[in-house]
Image 1 (cartoon, rainbow, N blue to C red):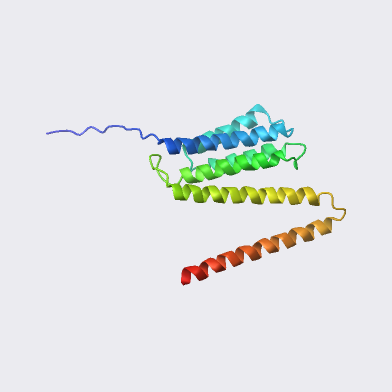
Image 2 (cartoon, rainbow, N blue to C red; image 1 turned 60 degrees about the vertical axis):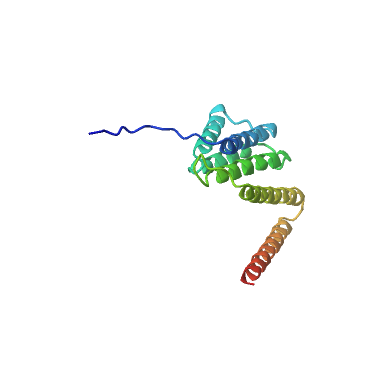
Length: 180
């Protein structure tokens, strides 16, 4: 009679997965550094928590730690005395980089090879998200100097309506093309 002995094996991520997981850490670190360059003075424990959550997200990109990491980087940015500093665009880029990298890494097991088409698609979405953040930042810089706050509110609603209309048209045209 033979007895089978279980063998414990570790599965390590491939090079492409390691790259994505490193980008998660670099994105979170970039957001913290940008906040500090803008004047934020987070304590060492706050930085440690954010970087710890980034490390957990890098190891387990499908965990809830990514939400905590993004909330922590937003909190660190909120400590900056000048919240409309152009460095907010660097922080936003770091947060988008960390988020998109974790999202792509979480789509399969650690040994899964990445699909180039899907990576390019998510990279394009990340760039569009950053462009939207830059547009909101630019609008905020312009609106902050307006004498009447109601005008700023009305401009915001108009921009929101234009974006909603454009998105509706894009989705509608896609549905028409798919139905043909």
